[in-house]
Length: 266
Image (cartoon, rainbow, N blue to C red; front, side, top):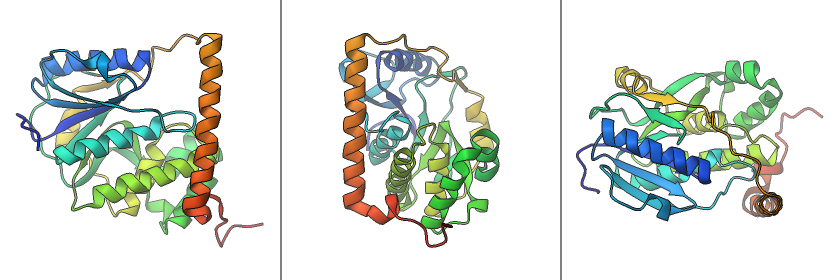
């Protein structure tokens, strides 16, 4: 257990120059509004965060695992932080802390903004709904009772090992979605994984207070187009991750990732 003035820590993912810069701004916010708290960062350049700060920085080297994007990679830093802290507040690097954060308690499981997954997907990405239903069938879940969970900020608290299964299941769901061409966001995968381990998404008064302190920028600052060589390298990396993931998925659990559900129509 890390010595801390708080019973919780923050975590974030900072891959690439833009997000490293945003994470450094987030550090400044935490120094001002939550001094001496611990922040766990998974990043492609831990040295970028070396130095003295008014909070405790734990930076770990991470290479993107997501096939196209890294939305599901945030599970790794959450898992790491849960080793040392019972409660992890995960916020995206393109978020700002704008008010003081007090020592607050959250119930075991997951806390965050949420809404019915079917309603969310039907409104925003109706073409994805059939894949959500297939996943629900594979996971033996009633999709009507599953929530989408806002992925830009949420809380995970230890729950007698369920948090470990949650992270594992999230990874499997995220891989399934990416292998079927769904690369955007992670809120659906988080919600399905939470439902699979039996968590009801909480949104209590402490959460409402916390959300008053967090402002998400929704990645308003975009990267400029990469140089030609860098673009070529990114394409090579993409195909390497894609083919590696395809092979690993086929070996580990072919039926889950590629098999048809028994009730699939032909």
